[in-house]
Image (cartoon, rainbow over all chains, first blue to last red; front, side, top):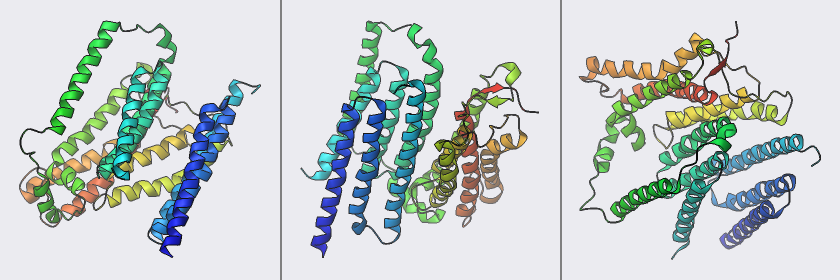
Length: 97
Length: 313
């Protein structure tokens, strides 16, 4: 049981860091602000989500797990809204983008 | 070499790289953005050193509030930046050499301390139960070094008076010049409706848990200030005129109550800022509750900047 949980944690956290890596590469390599935002929000949502999922079996139930999920939800909320605000600003600065 | 050691080395290298990048950054705006990231990484360093209280303060004040103040300054200076007088190379080299010398001397002292390091930590821990607090940092701030803490809160009020003094004479007591996002029903409106209920609970919790766990009035007050600024920037609430009596009362409430408790010490416990036996914790909680409100209001007003419009009548 412990072994299975360890494997689960390792796989989920590894998959999460993969999305962070992909998001960072996208941020550095994509041509304009909107596509870079796209790459970044994927890293935040999926990457952090998978890391949190992987860590869930290792924290105290229920408050530790509740804290981790809250962190993920708050990052989702702020990430999505900041991305919208930046995109909105880019749209108004460069109407053809 | 275990994983924790590698993590520490990578973290230190990252902090060093960002610090160098901030100094080399061409414009003030980029440097400030780098500074915010630097502050968050520094908070991680403090976590690694098991100084959670310091980490929270670094993230909230060092990175958050200072970052916001510097962003405001950078955007004000943006117009003047291309014509700004540039500093010559000899002067830059001199500054670099002096800074490097100070850093090297500090590093040397940390790595090769002269003799045994003097510490008051065991004494502080030994007397902590008498205070009723369980967080040694709160014990130092409100019992052993209460006078320093009182002065620190008064300095915050003086800083606000300093910022207000930058206003033109005719705007004294007017409305701060924080730029407001003047578009209704955007995603920012949504965020400033969803986040404050959570943020206010978190802010109060941080102050409340500070007696026994990492946290405290300053960190809690900063979270409250951030929520207030968010609501004001989103345009959901008008920025208050700085001549409102209620607002000014809230700014001095915390330091005033702390001062009254300090003066009561003369009558009840024999000296300034001494607590009568058994009443230390409740008195500290009262002072901290008032300070949390005052710090929140003061930091919010500091971020809002000097008055730039006439007060509403």
